[in-house]
Image (cartoon, rainbow, N blue to C red; front, side):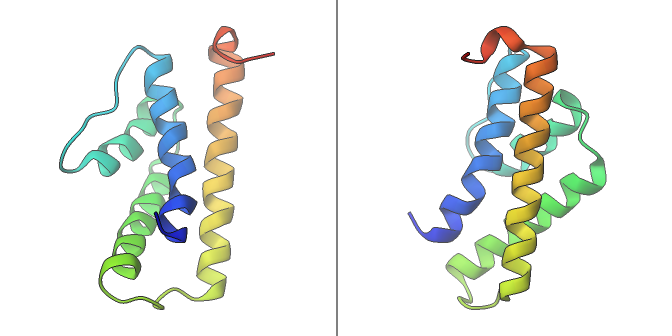
Length: 105
């Protein structure tokens, strides 16, 4: 697994955890990542604009990984990491409030 894949994995894991917390499973197959990210609007009430940014990031990661390596600037990478960290923190905050029983002490 490449570095770009491991960088985006936390937000997908967070979104999947939010789905599981509400009794849903992450879809599988084509469009999986897109659907999991979109679910954050419904699970943790994430702003649709943030979802659009995450989807743009997902598409950029795909291009940088499979088509044109080196197309992401250092600043874009830093911005992406900051966005992913913020979304993961939002999911954690939501879990603490909505489903504290699911979190380890």
